[in-house]
Length: 257
Image (cartoon, rainbow, N blue to C red; front, side, top):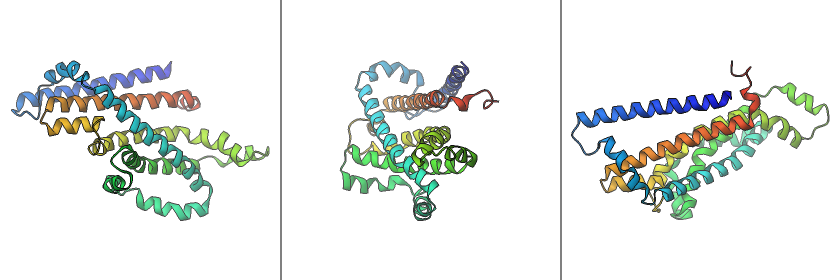
């Protein structure tokens, strides 16, 4: 019940922010005389027409790419983060590479990815993975390093194997921070989507926005921007709900103050 109230509060905050942005948008439209800032009422009136124009396909294609990027990042990042946390040798060898690579703009590697993997989804997903996976690795490694060592001593005292310790101690302990990192990663994934979908594709929300921009159809461009913003909010709330469902101990009254 408490979490439902939290979700409702998030929704109300989103609505407040959405209305504030639209008010600023309307004022900007009234104060300026440029087609770059169309009447927001006209944009919303055009939604039913545009939604018929393959909009659902654009949304589903983008969600597929985001899902593939996030899934691969988790499959790569979680084991690597655990390895770095548990092995001093691996940490000495790999962490300098991760530390160096993390701040490098991954979008600069898109031409290389397209030359190696072609113009299809492979190159786009790879760039998305490169953007997200470092956040996952660092989040997992740092979360493990903050686990109370007494928890390990207790489970080792009953003869638990390393895999049992990882399954029953490590993974539950890092899940809250990992899901928080995942929410941040979703924002990064949506941001990178606009860039990578501008090349070698005819579907996706990033392509839709850039195509409307190139055709100087600012109404459709704003429709794409609004749509991707709503998708981002829904994904964020979905991860928050998932965190509540699988990390209930982290939402106990003691943890909520």
